[in-house]
Amino acid sequence: RWRGDDDEAWAALDEDTGRRVEDAYQSFVAGEEERATLKLEPEADADGRPRGRIDFRTMEQVIKSPGAGAGERRRRLLRAAEAEANSEDLGDDEEMRIEWGHGQDPVSGHGFATYGDDTARILEEAFAKYQAGENLKGVMITGENACDYLVDFKEMQQLRLATRRVRHVYRHSVG
Image (cartoon, rainbow, N blue to C red; front, side, top):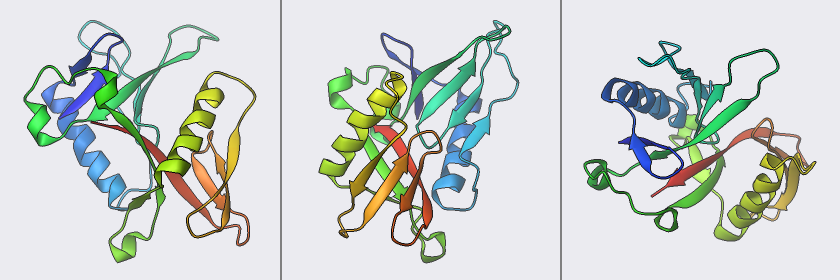
């Protein structure tokens, strides 16, 4: 069900890790869990490679490189549909799409809601610049409700300018 991008292909997470990731993801989406990250245990795999944490807002596995001053590596994650979960070949990236959304009211049963296609395209283009280190930390958008929002990519939050209300945003690979 859960797969990680290993540069050339999507590789399935091991069964135990996949189950823990799915449980944490379901709790996060339902609004039961405020933490958007899941620290993977044990900290290293059988080959001694660090496992890091899962960030559900960006749908990435964040792995800190060993050593002082070392950076981090980000691995895209995909939550495959049940029909695709038994297939080893998910096809190329053209069959995938990026979905952007924002937090809603979990009391009413809505953990997240998606942005419209035009807004998602703007967010994705700006996020790519942010990840490339082009001194872009966020972007201002006008929502489908005609309200202005500032989206902060570092915190993965949106701020409604008129009310100063903050909500989480997320970026998922869906296929």
